[in-house]
Length: 420
Image (cartoon, rainbow, N blue to C red; front, side, top):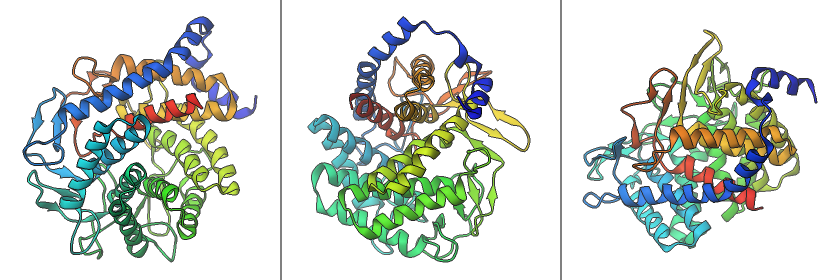
């Protein structure tokens, strides 16, 4: 065991507990069936509650008590993630009902969220499908590519592939930085300069962000699998190098979140969920293009990033939200999406190493999700819990940021990995 392993074990004492091997083996054997059940439970929730039968497409917001706000705005990210989730689900299940919902999302994006004048996806439309926020967030364009390429995989619908390629070319034309590398985060509707580039109110107004770059490379890799262009492969390699050179802080293997145009890093905030998501996802993107040097680097980084992210693990197996390295303050909340990413991150690390440390971490995290995140009475996953207050009240079940992407993807990834 190396020095990093010893250091890691010292900050995660719950991992040193002598687990009952029989119970752990039983939990491991039960895991695929439980994950399969949860996948269908998630999909059923969105099929049952999220469709907007009056305004078309999908409801913009549903609260934690399953009450739909039919007047809520509809975001391009939510709809693109629905498109991906049900396309990917269909590619796994072959269930025609899943394809129906994917097709519903595809038509809504094509008709209402695509800018017919300047190209690209609006950030949001109102409940009637009228343009609301017209700026071009590159994060949203990336999720458009991600969903459309998965829908093309499911249907071979040429219109979907063309839309994905149009978005790819727009990102390369307007967002790619020829001087410093990487991609600028946001633009006005006509792709001109935009002062406020923030993805959400909690973010810094940075020219470049880790989050946007992560989902560009994710989208490009998914597009490459159905459209293997050499230029696209080169762009993916460029993005992987940006992560290794600029975004991963190799002194502690957490990721920087916000950057200036010339890649000056603000490293004050550590996001455990983004760390563990990036670890396995960058590896997956490298493997998609089959470029051996990139795969080697990405696999090494996946392990070190996952270990770093495990600093945010609580003794119950849940992953805390964020840590401010300057003020030494931790946000003692466990949001739903980092738990989903932790499942895949731990499974990936176990596959790479065979170390039961990661296998046990996966089981503990799944146990935490089952006990605290799943809404067993009303469906879907709750937003999260707070250390002092319990369930985080007043949060969405469906919304601009609450979607079936993280949790359905985690289920699909785990099932694919365990069956393999």
